[in-house]
Length: 240
Image (cartoon, rainbow, N blue to C red; front, side, top):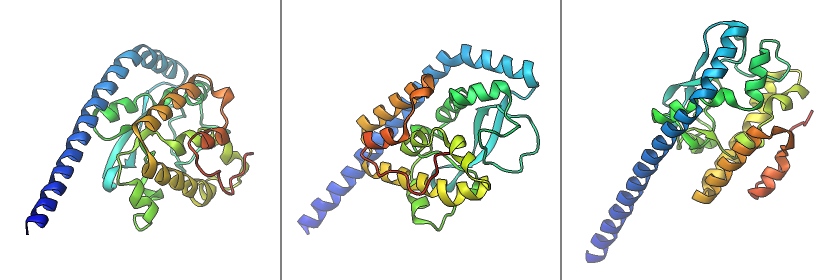
């Protein structure tokens, strides 16, 4: 009886410590997001002005995405495409709706900066699987259950490895089908694997590399990224 009681107390103590770490991490991430937002205000204002001059309002693009445990939330981006009815949520680099300003914003990932607000609101974190639109999520898939156990993030291993996803999709005539049947399963595999092995150090390294390739996209090499994190190479994905 005494042994069982001791084990129960130890388990409760471990769970309490885990909850405390998660709360502390969430607080620190929100503080970091608030600081980053303040630093990015000049960039956001300049980008917003360029969007308005070229194609008018709105400046922000809002889209429903699936978050932790399947909870939907509204993801924010700087608008990089013409404000027309979107037949598909999947975009390739030659999409005619992408504006000139939008192409620049997407190349340097500046369009993702408003998601710092999503982190501040608690819907996202800095490192975590990228959130998908509801039509792409299969709640019966074990890989999805693993991915949805975490809050989505600005970046993770699959996000970085598929930094040039829009260029990859150029190799396929049916963009939606290629994304759903080829690219998305690979991203899920990489995201789930990263969640199983992630550390504070690997998160910091991912953030640093994501920032580096945002500033210097020309030197990006997905195979090098996968080798850096000892991840298996992409399967069945054309490179263009």
